[in-house]
Length: 261
Image (tube, one colour):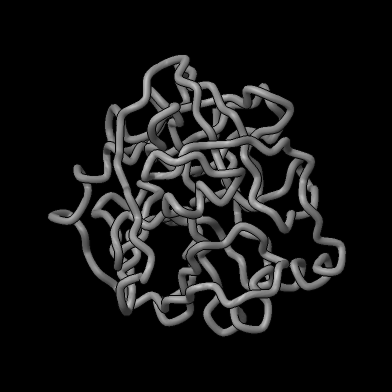
């Protein structure tokens, strides 16, 4: 089975649908923030490092139009996202925007230019580490864990709710169930444990525009990042989604990384 990548929508398309951007119909929930306190809805995920990978030359004019993919801050000056999100782009073209919940809401988000792109030696691994020009003012509590079959996770992102659908303004929160599947166990590069598969556990699934956005394990006490969206075979709840395992990040970075400015 072949993975269908979730490719970022071109700026021209985003411009055409900007006037129609609207939140997808995903129920709000209450989650613990990284410090263990209850937080309402998507703001908890923003506090846990969920960020926007944006086109640097457009981000100040329109965050919605500049959105390329999601990303995860893994420390103050480093983020990670899907490699295909930066195809044909240089570090100078990119910025990370932190603390965002609504792409269409006016405000003054933190915008940090990307200084350097770090790629693994294995070109088939859909991961890239983003070195930022300066550290974020936000203190992120990143922690990575391995997934197991039947784990209940929450994916986030600003992608469409269905194949061919419009992007939304507000961050989606999508329950997932980890499932064993040959697509992740045998067919993907990077060896065992580099990727995991999951299906939607409710009415929605990850879709176009969600690439690079993180996936969390959420309990009553903590929120832990376990991966980020890479692609999938479709956007319906029963379709298999493919996710890079953050627990595998130390295997490919930094000692096997090469840098491109």
